[in-house]
Amino acid sequence: MGKRQRITFIATFLMLLSYGCVFLSVKERFTPEPLKDTKDIRGTFRVILYGANHLNDLETIAILDREGDQYEFEPYAPEFVYRIKKNLPANEALSEAEKFVGWHQSFRNVMVSRISDEKGFLLGYEVRPLYYPLDFGFSDILEVDYFKSDNKIIVRIKLKESVEKIIFDGDSKGVFE
Image 1 (cartoon, rainbow, N blue to C red):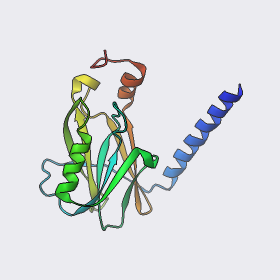
Image 2: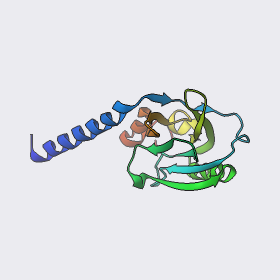
Image 3: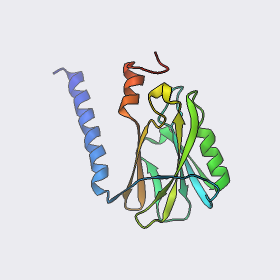
């Protein structure tokens, strides 16, 4: 094994080890519930705008984090991958989130979901882009996990494996043919 291969192996091992360590202290996992109507969204929010960093950045999502509660959403990613806007009223936060996730040429519409704790207490909302199914095989192309760790909600965002294959391996059945 050459020096370059050893360095790559060690870096990969350390990255996987640190990824696993974050989730050792995880107590709970939350599953967003899609909303039929968004007119009941009220309050003030921190808006986390994740992704949209290059021309085909499909790992794009917005999270409305309720201001003033005991939890804070934190993406499991370097800070340069996302931006945060603070103290936005609900209508402005939702509008900003929808505009942010709708930039891609394959964008069809949004799915807004409520994120609650185990007792039904509202933590925030997820604004997820949906795409034309012909482009990627289905509309919802993201895997997003929410884990509670102390007073933080850690958010892990990634593309579904089949979408990664289409984009990175050229194994396309859609728009990339």
